[in-house]
Length: 190
Image (cartoon, rainbow, N blue to C red):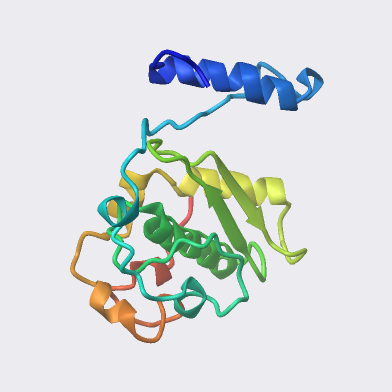
């Protein structure tokens, strides 16, 4: 606890010095390949019903893979496409389905990690459960060349600003043959 109010940059430096640097041994940090990201979206001081409507009323497992795929916990319902809980989940489905459809693997799960306030994911992880037909490095390279995980691109490429979400309230979001479910399409890869 400090006697003065700190600015966000000062607070980030303080957290790095007093918490991160105390917990992570410096030998594990390569300064050329390590970035500390602390609350990139800025202060989040409005919580509860004012900050998050809390109106999802559904469980994400029901809307997705019924427990087959790992999930992060953020439900899709009532969220607009700017929320990666919804849009990035659709895009991961899109990428995984394309990996399988193009014969790169028999199974594929794509995992992403975003930070609030940043447009690109912090990480993209591809798991083919040992069914890959090319090396994982080759598959990652193909994905990197053909898919842009920035939030703006996801919204544009999948055309997510259309009034399509009522259809998702029944029978789930994935595995459906409906032209409005653009994340179920196959694209030509380079």
